[in-house]
Image (cartoon, rainbow, N blue to C red; front, side, top):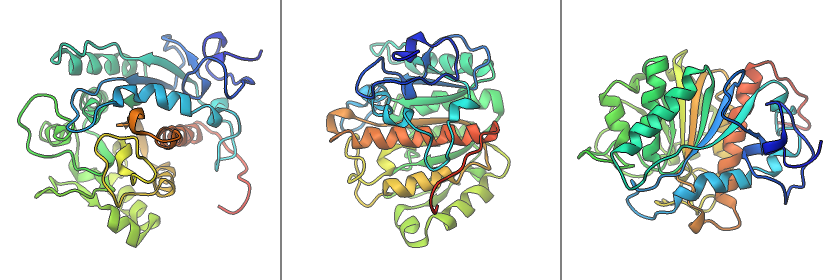
Length: 319
């Protein structure tokens, strides 16, 4: 069997030969399906960006991340040295259907979408869309797992004063106030904008990470999260605009892509229950570098789950 495995595959662990520059697109060439039986992880998109406060366009993010993932589907995973789909059953659900002209229905529909998938026992890997979409996703996860530890990669705290409505800069403060997030176990990484309160989060600013390094950051993140259910929310603007220009609210001085990948790869010992990757805005991207970073971060999170399912490999070279 060769080609178009996104719709021709019969199982959820198959990987065929594809033309990298051709064939039906899905994330990592996973099978498009709505059958949740025996599925470990469901990939889906939430193409919504009406909560942005500056540049729009991240409604096109899910499509761009899927397209950028094609090379990651060709070889064994780096640096892990295995095919994650030998041990991890992953499907691409497609996108959550929304009515962007009815703002009140959007968070309701996202939460219902997530609750349906989580009820099956599968985990979720979700592509935004703007960062507001994380709020209904978190609510659905908290309904299943209880209050979650949030590991947030971001240039912004997203805990500014909440005046109601749908806003991608206030929802984590709201989630914390509602008990959806356990802030005592949560860490924000890469911040470089000002807020006059930490709202109980541990904040590892981008300059702190630059000065103190990956291992010091991971020690804090892991100790704080403990054995709590961990939800990772990765706003691509956590990266410096040099590595992720395609985003709506870029801020200089951020994480390099290698730093973000090393931090994500260091989360494998935690109780990972869900992840979103948001704010990829293709109209402002160049040569797909933002979408490539987003796809790689998501790919590596799946590899952590594959390791939990027993995947082992033989990394090559010094790591």
